[in-house]
Length: 158
Image (tube, rainbow, N blue to C red; front, top):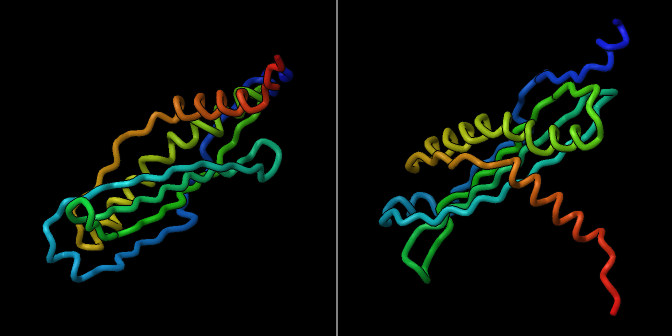
């Protein structure tokens, strides 16, 4: 029975922390005098690395760039970047399950913390609230896996 307990998959969140955070408003205070017509651009990425046997750091990186103004004369209102990280215990998973857990499940856990940090930074910068829409990390993970698979397939020769 002890062998079965050791083989059972284990997953646990050990710690959530902010690894890096920044906010920049290069056109303040002049930007506050303009009509608010924001255009939001979100760049998102994830990374992970093993810390020790069964323990992994996962980092969700979000960069939000907001430009303001009418089309053709947009200026950067602000740029904020958050690297939300967590330490996760993941044992007893096969390779595919581990990749999916680190690439989709863990970022899904980290996202609400990163979204809250971004909203807080934006408000402190004296801009209207910015609540990012939910992200489907499972779909992003599957898309990345499909792209990786397609790149590894040898091209057919005629």
